[in-house]
Length: 171
Image (cartoon, rainbow, N blue to C red; front, top):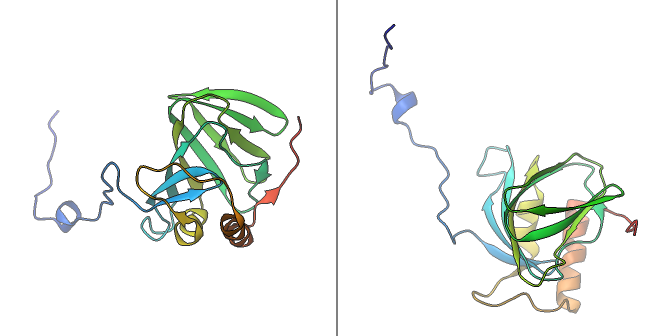
């Protein structure tokens, strides 16, 4: 058996189109007390997905909610987060993968003393662009400040655009 190789002058093999975002790069914002670095937006992925690298400090994470228009997928990079899936809680650690279908109540909380890191993706995209456009720009080397009136106003604006359904904690 022999392999046939295409000629290298075929434009399918020489045209460039990759999205490359180096480590530490991408717009970085403070949202819901976490640090979000937007790695890819729907505009950059031809409407495929939006990707965010998140650092969740001790005590951080959003309240229980669902997304009627997006699925949300998480991949843990470092640390531990307690996830809520409907009425069930579990602890996710580095290397764990979580996929949340549309309409499912979920949240994550950092119950540890050290920050956790993860990637999360929206399909279809949209919320990542709202975070980039409306969350407070992060200041390098600083932790997110406590939520104040300005940040609450930003959160209300983002909620109006993303349209999550805020849900009670089943605790």
